[in-house]
Structure formats: structure tokens, C-alpha cells
Length: 256
Image 1 (cartoon, one colour):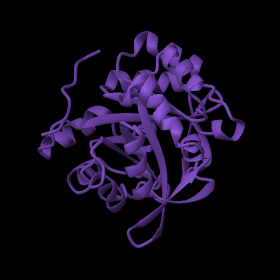
Image 2 (spheres, one colour):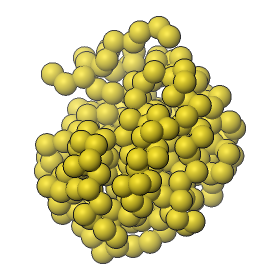
Image 3 (cartoon, helix red, strand yellow):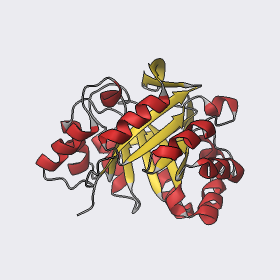
């Protein structure tokens, strides 16, 4: 049985850790470094940093944050937002990122997926998908932090991206993000049953049991969490215990 990863997601605007609802109404939470170290010491399997406004300005400003984190955080770091070229990916990977997550630029230029995958390996190329439901069992891909429609069907897009070299999918439900109503299991299931690469479910965790639901019913390989951690409603340790009690195999926590 696969081991499920528990991932802390940190959305960044400028120098601040922020959190919104439906990717809007962004509220400042605090220092990214402080929260990253907190989740690392709680036992997070990975950390995801997303520069939420990077696509608007055509740049990613997380190199310094990643460089600082890589000094004393020893779990994989995924970085996304505003990555538009192999050179952008190179800069972040050299700063200490283990993977890059790309959404807007991949939609504009799908060949970027192949270019990054060929240079660094598919394990470094994460396709970030912001999905919004438009009909029964049908979701559309959005870009620019959920601002822009693309007309792309989510399932068709992830299948194409995997064929091009994407090694992992970060799947965020715009409808559920920040709502605490639970993951969009139908969305996650629609994607996991069509691709062979790992799928990270993101958007909507309100209680620990939501983790169990999306793994069992959605067949997610990992869960990304933000709101439930930022506001102290649960911890990585408590979520790990919930998974174990439900018979879900998770990675063994090693004290750091």
C-alpha cells in the first residue's frame, strides 16, 4: 500500500504568509519562515510554497525564502508561482527547491513541461491545477491564482501534461479552497483514475476526517493543508494519528 504524504502549504504574498477563501480575500497570517519551521518540526513530509501574486507580475520572489528554508528544513520543498521558463526553474532549484509547480505558464506553453522534465527529471516537474466546477463531474482549469478561465477541461489537461512529462499533480479546488467543507472528492477521483503519477489534493480541509475521506474515496496520494494548520485547529501530528487510526499508511515521523 502506498504511503500517504502530509504536506503543509504556504501561500505567499510579498514577505507574508497569507490565506484566502476561493483564492480571494487574502488575509495575512504571519511570517512564512516561522510557520514553515513550525510545520517541519511537527513532522510535515513536505512543504509547498506558492507565490500567489507572481503570475500578475511575471516573476517569482521566493528564492530568498527557499534559500533560507533549505538551510535547516530537511524535507522536500516544492515552489510555485510565476515560473515562466527553464531559467526560472533553474534559479529556484539552485536556491534549494526540490520541485517546481507550474500552472499559468504551462497552460500558455505546454512545451515548458517537457523542457523542465527533460532537464531536471519528471520528479521535479509538478503541474499545479486550479480547478473550478462548471457542470456535473466537469471542471475547468483556471490560471493567475484562479482569476482567468482557460476553457480547458481539467481531466483532459492533466492527461496531456503527464504525457508531456509532469511527474506529479497539485490539484486545488477553487470551490473548496478555504471553506473548511472538505476536499472535492469527485474532482480528485476524476483525476486519480486517469493518471499514473501522484496526485496531491488541496483545498477544503476543515477537520482531520476530511483527510481520510479524500484518501479513501478520492485515492489521493498526498494531502496539502493550510487553513487547518495556520489557525491551529489541528497539527501535523494529530492528522498523522487520525490517518493511522483509520488504517491509512503514512510515512513514519522522525523527530527533528
